[in-house]
Length: 231
Image 1 (tube, rainbow, N blue to C red):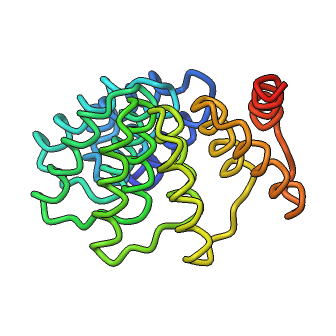
Image 2 (cartoon, helix red, strand yellow):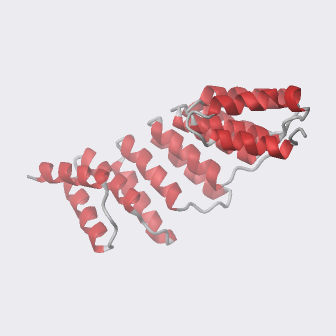
């Protein structure tokens, strides 16, 4: 018996989770109609796009969106979120933002995952201003930022040399009742260290220790840099 579309979609997803599995996943997607007589649906395409995202193949992922639309298969929020993540990993913030607008034009509503991934993309692309604009846009849509949102925004400020804004975001987190974690403190301490604000960096380190938040390698590196500056 030939597999049905559910089985084919599951197989594409399973291949995509394997090391270097994006190529066989895409091949299975593209041969499904001819080999098994089943037409790929949104779930099948999403599985193949996810495989490309995991394989750091952002160009192939975007190409699949075009193939999907040409086949008359409608993308959904998961499609776009995965594509935006692929572009973020590939340091393609402009394309990620373009996908957001395409998503909206298709009548799909961006969710918290969409914005978190976009803010991260702008951080990787050294665009702190755009990252903060997205944070405000997200809030304007009634989507409450979570710790992942704030961490991505603080990291964007750190990469963009905006230590003041990184600290302002820490204050917003506290006001919103969002608990800071290791990533939060590491990014904020690094932002202060890079900005020559060693006193603030060391104060944050002390606050982190008092709160019982575990350090990681990034925290240690930033703390060493701050202490070296202080001395």
